[in-house]
Amino acid sequence: MLTKLSLRLRVFLFFALMAVASVLLVLGALFVGASRATPEDIASGFVFAGVLSGFGLLALIAGVWFLFDENIARPIERLASGLRTKAHAGSGDVDTHSARFLGDLAPAAEAMSEQLMKSTMDQASIVAAETQRLSADKARLTALLSEIPVAMVLINPAHQIVLYDKQAAAVLSQVSPARLNASIFDYFQKTPFMAAYKKMISTGFEQSFTDLSAANGLEFDARLKPLAPGEGYLLIIDDAHTTIAPDEGRPVVFDFDLMEGQATGDLMQMSLRDLTYVVFDTETTGLLPHKDEIVQIGAVRVVKEKIVPGEEINQLVDPEMPIPPASTKVHKVTDRMVAGKPTIREAGKTLHEFSRGAVLVAHNAPFDMAFLRRHAEACDVEWTHPILDTVLLSAVLFGTTEVHTLDALCDRLGVVIPPELRHTALGDARATADVLCKMLAMLHSKGIETLGGAIAEAKKHKRLLEDLN
Image (cartoon, rainbow, N blue to C red; front, side, top):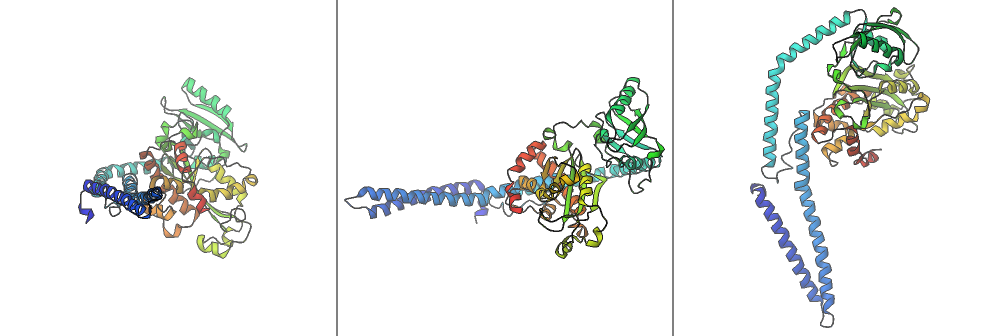
């Protein structure tokens, strides 16, 4: 019956009921106090009445708060998160049932949400033909560059990688994993490289030079070719002794949005949209980081709010101990599968190198990081990366009263994990990366713009992780 009344009338009746209840409580307390008072001690009756009415009013306020929280505050929070999910993740439903006491607000929000989705579908149909043409152009570009028998890297004015072909990926990977948005000085020694670069800038002509790798002493003969002013330059690696068998399955990898890239400064002050993320997951022999071991590492890279195709880790790890059958039942990794695979000393170092300059992201990150940090000294690395946890980001966006498991987040945001990939390190890492990409836009709409801001908000909900671990 109440749902048929206007919201303003219900609010009026609510406060009227609270006023009447307060008056009745005070009158009732005075009546009880008066009945207990005696001619010799009238004051005690008034004191008792005051105490009784005070406790009664406290109980009334607690009840009012509960009703307000259950029927107004929580529904508004769910309505806001539902709208934000629909707007920025393209999924989710507006919870009209829980908001049934909010008058016309829930139906209006649902109508707006449906209109938004309709407009989105109309726009999608309009751009479908153009998208198909761009996809065809990309395929032609990939095929063309893949056939050129030299290793090419496109670099922006901030010396960050914008494009590399499969030959370049093979060459760069001899030093460090090939990565979009990585500094070229992760691969080459800076002094001779910059000498050639400055000469190229001053003359405007291509410059040949010889350089050593930044890590393992490999020598490269290379050329720097200028592009238009302000558009970066092209690195061509010619030396025959650097050539190894190309990975035929790896396409040209590029993101021309990175041409506007900026040199990495204070990560905490950088926009969430401009950061590079490495989203990772581990499978283990058990749930005790101080004694169990990692059996599988999966990781993907996210640049400009997009997962970079081909830039991933899918590594089985020899735990140097038997894998309990109960754990194998969850992640399907057996002793036979990990026999002869790299140990955590090698695999941990590979992940660290893959994550250079990036923000680490995981679902329930303290669990995975505890395993990695325990072996940090053996890997000869330090895990000093900034860390974001999608459990805490979920709490920031959807409130602490919601469920924050990876499955719940995927359902809420419309991310599908193929059943055969669930509880595999790479499958869960990809799902977490999809979730992150959708949540970044939602954080932006909530006014959380920088990494420092996101971490500060996430810390407010760190108790969730303490309960999980």
